[in-house]
Figure (tube, helix red, strand yellow):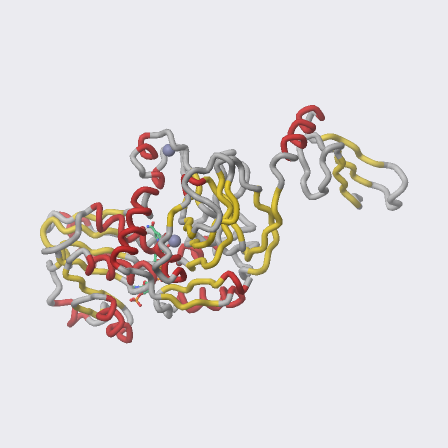
Length: 406
Ligand code: NAP
Ligand code: ZN
Ligand code: ZN
């Protein structure tokens, strides 16, 4: 019977930080002080000593957060450690973090790639509390943001083009991902602090309400990026499918870029809000009568729906050369009838968040045009209830956690 496991190493002062070279002592006797013991080292002590020595220069900071421990457990308080800022790192005190439907998909392992414990959150706004010696762009006190990415290879063609989200060597997600070392898990914004390289930190205007800026870091860029890519604007008829976090930002950007915007929603009670946000028309997708006049009507549909739905119904609303841009990521595959594409030379496309340069461009555009997300600020202890409300489409239009409540 194994009773106690101990880790001892001359340079390793924290028992929780088992390193290569640590000697592990398994007490296999009922009496703690008596043999038999099983003693072994994890690797050659020389390597261990080197790593322990190196760690002395990379101290860790205790961090408070909320995490999911499994696909079925609620998100609950969790203590972990962040590295102290390295030479190129920025340390940020998180003020607000938005709640994306992707958090819910991943907490519940709906995409099948979840790693636990998981600290979700990739819509982060906060103030810089420390910077590494080589950091050029930021200083203590700056208002900054972190979105869905915290690193990428920075060498491949995509990274060089500023499309880090499509990095050929795998970009590093803000959570549910591994750092470039391939073994350190990343933990997201449902926490008091984050430390990340300055290249993945964004400048945030002091002139906007910051709780409304947080969702721009994912919901904002995910809708801004494809609308810019397909040059949606004046003279175009744009449909936005689903009025949630992404959907309401798509309405704001679509209207701001000059397109005629139609909201396609399952929720009749959201019509007034859709119009206030900038939609020119509203159609209830549950009512076939309302959809009749929209056949072959749109140049673009941006689909933000999080749950399985019938793509064919919407494809039929596209005019010749129309494009349905899928940003919503339902967990199960959808059947697409080829004739719905062939008939009008329509396309179905997708888009993933946005690269770092375009995310900064989007934040600057929002600051110049006074655009923020419409938010409901919540206490972090209400996060699980917020997920349930999000599942019912009951969000106006993004939950944002006030990190003071942590
Ligand atoms: P959200 O706030 O929950 O909004 C989703 C909206 O979709 C709901 O408010 C609802 O709007 C509509 N909807 C929900 N269930 C539906 C159903 N069964 N049929 C039709 N409509 C339905 O979610 P979100 O944060 O905007 O995220 C939306 C999706 O985008 C998620 O799957 C998320 O993972 C994904 N996402 C993708 C990217 C990317 O890079 N591509 C980035 C972020 C998020 P109505 O009440 O108006 O119908
Ligand atoms: Zn997101
Ligand atoms: Zn790359």
